[in-house]
Length: 415
Image: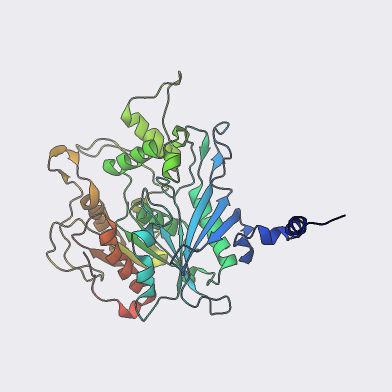
C-alpha cells in the first residue's frame, strides 16, 4: 500500500496533543477554573506588553431570576484587563493589587484607553509595583447583586463576581499580597459609588479606597433618574449589542403585560430590582417624601461609621466648582470649600434639582464633613473639573501617590 505525503501529514496532525492544538493562555494559570470562574482565553493586546485580557465566565453573571430565562446560555463571557508591572514574576516579592471600577457605559478597557493608566503606573523612572485589575461592571450594573430581575428573567450578581469570585481567583493565579493591606479599590462615577459600597461592605478585603466623582447619595432624585434611565437603556447589558436586546432591560408591566407609563412608578421598580426594597423618608417641612436604599447608600453607610476601617486610607475627589476660593490641600480639616449647594436647582428650570458634577461634588462635600465629624482621617480634593476622563487622570495619579507613595503626597493637584 502506498502512503502519500498528504496522508502522513494528516496522521501527524491527528497525533498532536489536544492541549497544544487548543492553547488559549489559560493553561499558564495555576487555577484557571475555580471560585466560580472559568478562564476561556488570555491574550496580550497589541503593543501593550504589560496588559493581559482574560476572557472568562462567571457563575454569577447571569443567574435565572423570577422565571425561565429568555437568553441562552444565561452565563455570559466577560473580559478582565490586568496590568502587570515590568519584570513581573511569580518568584518576586508579592505585589499589591488595585481593583478599578468603571463608570456607567465603560468597558474593561476604559482605564487604559481613556485614563492612560499604563503611563500613570509606569510613573517615569519610579514605577508602581502594583497589579491593576480592571473587570467590567456592566454598562449600568451599579455594583450590586440584583435581588430582582431583567425583562428576560435573569439578573447579574456583580458583587459576588467582583468580590467573592474575582479577588480569590486573582490571588490564586497571580503573585499578589493576598490580604487586606495588599489590596486597594478605586472607581470613577458609577465605579466611585461601587468602590465606596464595596469598601464599606467588605472592610476585611480592601485596605484603601479612592472615589473619583462618585455617586454618594441615593436619596437625591437626579441620582435616581440616572439609575432608572440606565436600567431602561442598558439594564444588565455588558456591551452595546446586549443593550440593544430588550431582554436585558428593566421595566415594569401591568397585569395585562402592558408597559407601565408612570415614570415615578417605573423608577421605584427599577431601583428595587437593582438594590432591593426601598425605604420611604417622611416629608421634612416643605420637602416631599423621598426614597432611599440604605443598605447600599454610601451616605447612609458613612452615617453608620462603616468607613472607620479606612482611617488615613480613603480619598475623595470631586469637580464642579465654579471657582476655587482657596486651593484644597487634601488635609482634614479641609481648606475652605467651593460653596457646594445640595439644594441648588437647574438655572434653566428652578423647579428641577441641579445635576452633573456640581451635584455630585455637593454630596461628596457632605460626605467629607460626615467623615471629619467621626474623626476619620482621609484625603479630600475638589476642583473646577468636569465629569470626564481628562479630569479623572489627575485624580487617579493623585490617588496612586496617596495609596502607594504617601511620603510624596502634597497639596491636591486638581483640574
